[in-house]
Image (cartoon, rainbow, N blue to C red; front, side, top):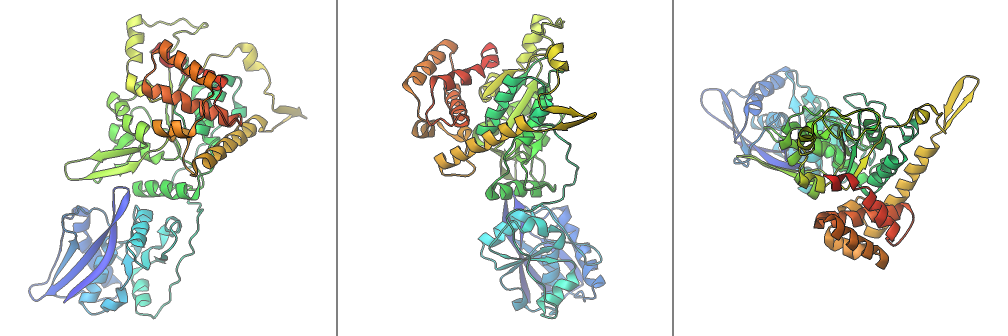
Length: 517
């Protein structure tokens, strides 16, 4: 007798349908699993056997063979525990084949029959829907993630016995109600990031920050230690507009694959340490899992002290910064993950940090300064839209009261006037881009050279100024179009329908540090 149960496993950014076939023949009792499986799936034999027996089912005293098709697909993880157990129940005639028609099953089994959550559940639900399955059964603990996908009945199951009784019609499980916005409990507490009102001065850097967020442009902040570079980068997380429903699903899919839970109503803010390995930043391993560049998808990737990162890591950023995705290839596996993020990076001008600081002498030699700045290659600099110098504040600027702080009976009440004004301006600029491009998650920074000419209107005087700057600074083709896209974002923030010379001039002012490099 042959039994067939359908399941799915993560395969890169997507899910792949797996057919679990079971066969029971005469012979000495044995339990084998074949089909290019790894150790996790091989160990499923003991989990499945114990879960069946401890749930009150009979395990067939025959030679049981489970084949996972397609055989050439590498399979990893505990996603197939539940369908393997159901295949054995069909082989032993405790379930009928028609009990499983049109249904897909995913979940890890505990020894007592409990069904535990697995990674990549959103990807698997989406794959089941695209393959035409009417119902999917998965761990109840994964329902919050799975409910982001609509158009398929999703059942959350606690244990193997409960699922068995439902399939036999003795207990009625109800499908979960799908929703577009889900708050998922975080595994780690989110640090309290500042807002613009908490930062004194630095009006030029704040302006650059608002432009970067509004148009999804990459930003580099340079300056001596203690000038507020990291604080500005962290404040950017509070300027991000909420993600659209489509962006929520894409964010949740990436984080589900990595086994982390986030709030899908907020955009990610990732700040890996400079000692992180290239695999941790880019992605990889076995199986290939997404790295920080993908976990920052539709959010911000903050790299503090950019030159301190491994050179291989920085050079690997070329593809995601240009294409918004990362392709990772290994000998037996290839995966592609989205990586459309805003890069906000900081760096000191030299190893000691005080080169060009009028208040503190630099102790570095010219060779040390050049070698330090050369850690960031020209191609990486060329992919950064704006480079801004964050200068040290004077003592008068430091000790003057914040404009939004009002003292009353020794209490301070803060009104987020500046922060709210900037955030509202960013939201309006994003809405203008949505209307112009007819897409909810397409921004000025996403335009290629063809679409720049199609959508962006340049005033004749703006064209003249841009051509002069190109000749004077020797801009590359990529830099040429990046200036136009930054200028378009400046026009959007000013409610202008045409890019004017003042917009080009301001866009050029945000690339001064790159010209010196």
